[in-house]
Image (cartoon, rainbow, N blue to C red):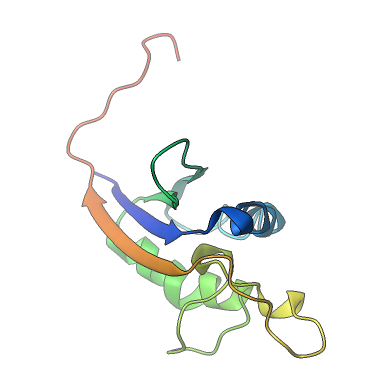
Length: 125
C-alpha cells in the first residue's frame, strides 16, 4: 500500500500568508513525479501554529526519488544540501531577489512517515 509523508511546519501567525503564497507558487512542482498520489497543505484552525504538508506516494522509493531529483531540481539545490523551498518554508532559488534568500516562513520542520494499512472512500465516489 501507499506511504504518507507529513512535513510539520511551525509557522508564526505573521508568516502564514507568506507560506501559503509560496506553496501556491509551487503548484505543479510535484504532481508529475513518478509514484506521487496526493498533496494537501493543511492550515491550523486553533490551538497550534503548525501547518501539515501531506503527501502520499506509491512507495518509499518514489518519495526518495522525488527528494533526490524532482524536489532538489524544483528548489535549485545541489545533491546533499539541506532541504529548502516551500516545503520547509523557504523560497525557491529562482524566487530569490538580488542573490539573497527570503526569510523562511517556517521556524521549524519535522517529517513524519506512515504506511497506509487501511483506507476508505465514499461508496459513490
